[in-house]
Length: 426
Ligand code: PA5
Image (cartoon, rainbow, N blue to C red):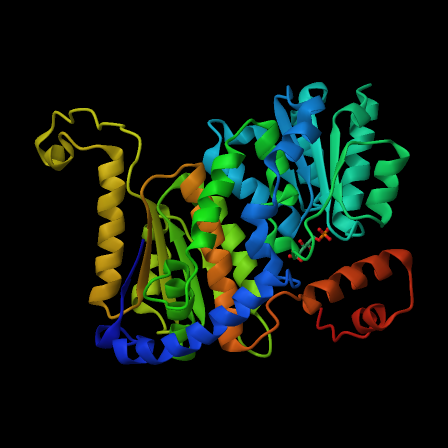
């Protein structure tokens, strides 16, 4: 469900007349999206994943490593964040899934030193098969296994395309491999082989996740008033047009902390183009109520705040305080307190005329997580249509990748020359 404090009370705000007018453009955008899906066009094909992803294919591929206690994802950006978002939200022990995305040497060394590699599966993922961070980390991981006398080839599953260096490495060692979905950019690939391998190894409900996503896919319609995913996208677009250049995403559930990171990538890499795009900010309720909320309520009027919560939570009663000054906690539950914090944040923003959009899940499980991930992807595609940007490309990201590879190889390219010629004030 989606709710929003809008209208004349908020600045930036959007009133019902403006949303009615926008709804005509939503209908046109929906038609483009539906045509793109029907033709499996690049990017739009991502919105067909709930139907196209075969969970059994993934379960079969991970079968040789399904008894592993830990899983390491070696990948970055869209090849890691979706996978971690899913396991963080659904696993009883999310620490069993570790990601090696960054190439910070101390972090990589410490992470590998702490893992029982004989009991750890590796999921190496790269769509292009050429990303320097992923390949470098994979080589370091392999060597760590060898140094401990553990056969990494028996513990590794690769997800990559038909060609490229990672495909060559996988073929040389005869690794089990999973194909990429056709026409799906990395950040839209959480609901495919790219995002589901660790969840399958940890025996999470990937079927339920896809079913939840499929329910939202089936319900995409031409009006924002009937389609919550489009309502979110349309409101975010309208608020951006009126000055909300920042979108602060604040889940009230630790299990959704990674969701905010995944959302930030989706929003920034897809919509940050042609001088447009909201800057996503990551926050966590109630922790950041004690820090960032001050800025959200009283700082520049350039933000919308997206709060997310599951309605059902585990029961953890607060023990009887036995003290008069703490009597307000008597009979309370931690979830009740967290909900009170959530309500207080929304009310505090609304009272200050700051736009807050509420996303509520009945509970946090595989089906509702699938709904949430799919809805945010559909919202993002809608915003891209309304803003007329190339949602599915990432030229700035590609530039950086080429520059890093060129610098390491000592190549003389446009990118490496730009790096060498950059102004330096150090
Ligand atoms: O969304 C994207 O395109 C990027 O974030 C990629 O997923 C990321 O750069 C990793 O690329 P690759 O999977 O090719 O290694």
